Image (cartoon, rainbow, N blue to C red; front, side, top):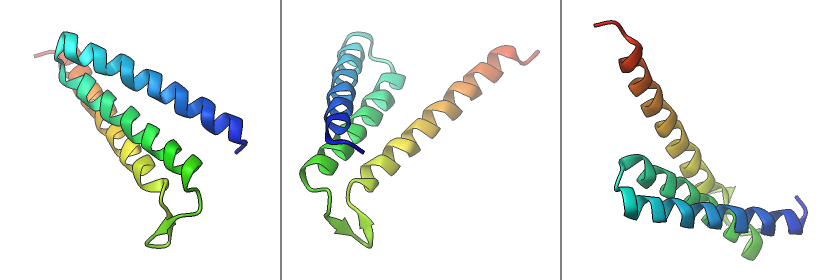
Length: 92
């Protein structure tokens, strides 16, 4: 991946993290905690990839660990959203 794209994504994810952090403080909803976590892990992943791209731990590049955590939080948010949506739709 080109270096300029790494920097662009780092800035983009940082802006998203700040925006969702502001929403979290103002609205105090759990979904914003998860969204802040997702973007915080993405910021960490790209910062590590830019600053120390060759560093490894356990045979895996270090920047993969926060990325996997971001995927896990994203999956959790999607499942939570679908569960809420199904409860609203289900005829009880």
